[in-house]
Image 1 (tube, rainbow, N blue to C red):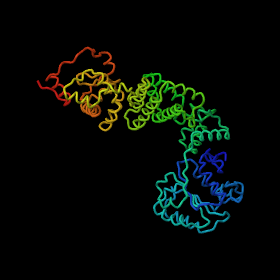
Image 2: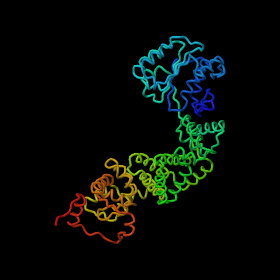
Image 3: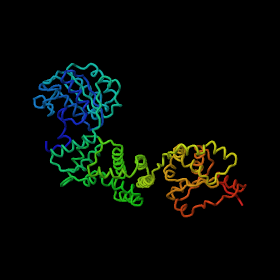
Image 4: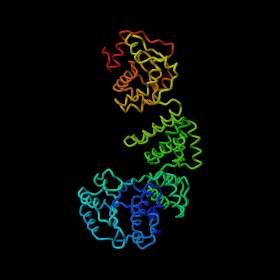
Length: 518
């Protein structure tokens, strides 16, 4: 046993040893204890959550002469034969490598003979969804009317691939992913039994990396323990598994909250130059933000942070509102899909860091319009009134109400723009409408490449059209780099020239993208 890998050495041998899956344990133990057995069971769920282990426990429980309250004794001769794999009354096959109809026919022939020592012949078919159509048809009749001494146990990770005729002839049990708390408890138990020294934070990282799979959690622990020469530390887990420690995620979050744009972008660049998997970092940081969100709203059942890190996280979320935290999570969630196809691997995370810092600077969300008092609502100008004003020839020069109209509708403009040009959204999310001058909406951008992307003629036409659809204003967007606008602001007392044929011609040329020939 000492040479076995951890997930085989610590495989559950009774229903009581099984971690989680209480709904499955209770149902099956009551069925065995009350002699209300079905002839076919279907175990479905994610990998590594105990389907095969439960199938083997059930096979022993229904045949153990000393079973108590539905639990096998694991000490009698029949139980030992089942555990050693020497019994002729249990047949376990892997459908991934035995997919054909001939394999199922051999199995059916095996069922024609009565059990040698046990009461039931148990057939366990793992990954049953891999069987061919002919094999399913051959199995169908036996599932419908099996011999009295036969029990089928089918296991699969992809139940949707099974024919409905197979599913309808079985008792279905859906296995759930293990919670992080259950995985952590199991890892601590295995570490204690195997005399493996590991810190709580290191165990928490492994539990999170397992994605609800007990088998994966023990395999990862085995891998890290083989590499460690002493105590398993978070740094060691980070190096071996390519994971990001809570400290690294916490440090990165600190840079965002303290509005250190240069340091945050440099943090991502250093990860890239070090050869780290940025997609994995994005997933780990997103999980850290999820833990922060749970802590912010008061859900503590799934929080896995150690006490010291929990206090640090509590201090961090106290610096921002819930709305800001939600927006920051959305920003980094979006960067995950962009990382998969971007030409510059670090760019989506760098942009996400810049955008998240802009969110942490202000209490106003870029996607949510600020709340207005009833008095302010009465003073606002409706889109219909503005459109009527434009048609009657009224000017739109540096009117605070018109600018407010655009600012308040900016999230709607971005949402509507997704229907026309989705690639402009990242740039325009960082934009700020600052002024309306002579039918032009001045919009500032933090960086030149954002401004250049929107300034292309075809893109400006699309943005102008969307602004008119949402607000009713006929405006032409004028992208400006933020630092240039701050260095050369337009004087408030400067008045634009009166409408003339020359101005009308200039406006037409901007819309059509043409020029006057001399």
